[in-house]
Picture: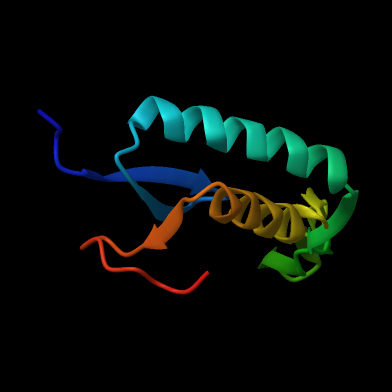
Length: 120
């Protein structure tokens, strides 16, 4: 007896956002293997381009003078906070797109949470 085609939803995590993919009759293991192959191919074709960016500039807090009596003033504040940097991969969006195209090329279709097809 032939089982009816099953629509399997698989979760694809890319850069913090969830995307669902479906392929009639496919298993979760098949999706994971296909996804891994697509990720490897995408990394080979679209390598990382790492760049250090400034997230927040460094600054000094203002200096305030506390006077306890005439002529008896003491500075406070004036503390240095160093800048914050982060490393980003400039090719990450293009690589995510390459994985999506690869999955679609192997019969997987993007769907919403309810299983309705959505455009790639």
